Image (cartoon, rainbow, N blue to C red; front, side, top):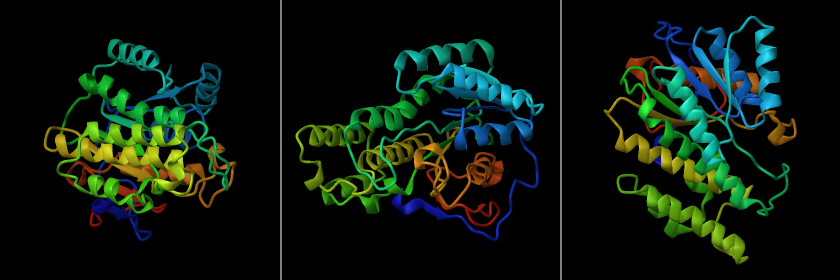
Length: 298
């Protein structure tokens, strides 16, 4: 999304001045038992949407639901491990049996096995499976239940600036991704497969992959590219697809370190998820930690 980045402005509005959503607006947030995901669910529930909290671990998921219930918020819950195809299918089946349509999907679930200043790729396959293939497979399974309304339906992928094209030093791969009009899912999958092969044969350091949190960065690079493909292929067909990097946020992934709180990051994520229909873009990568001016910045 190199050509479609939007820096978030600090002199901005917060939520849309006109409330377009209602209790009938259904949102799913993955990886939501803690951190940014939990804060996203809490804020959307406060604003009156019907929200489904998902978590890989049932015990932690139910604990999160209990804490929201104590605040007087009613939120639905179902177990979902985005790295497990059968879990995705079971979740999708449950959703289809309990809800009419899906309006908002926030793909937040992600993992990294590195500390802040580490860069091991020991778990590269697991990271790619969770952070790239997880959202991709979930979107594919949920596709039949999306409402597909040009004014309502949207996907927001929580991504990272570590996955920007500027971080990719391999010129051939970067040029391939820059060709947004022709890039395909097959090429993106080929890219992550090549990375995993380079990890296995020990050549990844010399192949021009991102230097910081390499496996995580590649997974987000692929997610960004996939988002561009979806936005391009479904433009004008009732669905918006955008990415959001919350910045260096205080979560378990960062060991509690960071410039921003999970609540602050989620507040902006909700603003992006609830952009007013007349100002709803697609194929955007939002970078920053301040609310976007939803009336003039897009």
